Amino acid sequence: MPTSPITAGASCEVSADLASLSMIANDESRVTLTAEKLRLLCKCAHCTRARFDERFPERFPGIAIVEVADLGYGLNISFSDGHNRGIYPKSYLAQLAES
Image 1 (cartoon, one colour):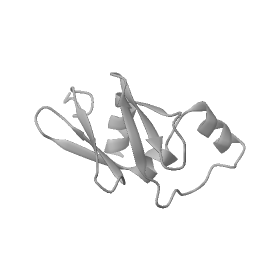
Image 2 (tube, rainbow, N blue to C red):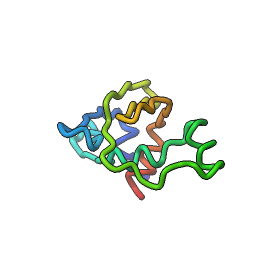
Image 3 (cartoon, one colour):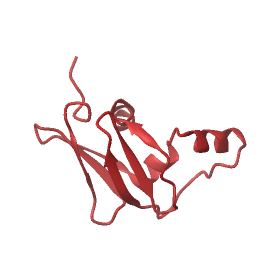
């Protein structure tokens, strides 16, 4: 079974326009996810509750990635709307990249 580039010691890079995040594996393969997709698919407790209460937005037009902290097992991504609670496990990012 092939290993996803995201889970194989990948580094990350935010695009110059802050609109996407690329994961780059040691073999230089690259997977890119948009900021809007990442924000929409955040699984933190705050976003999960907002979805449950039917008050989670359907879109985040113009959302930007303002900071990324690599926690080893995943990334803590901060967005231009002030949201910074989401931790994205690298296995979850790999799933998002495949969808």
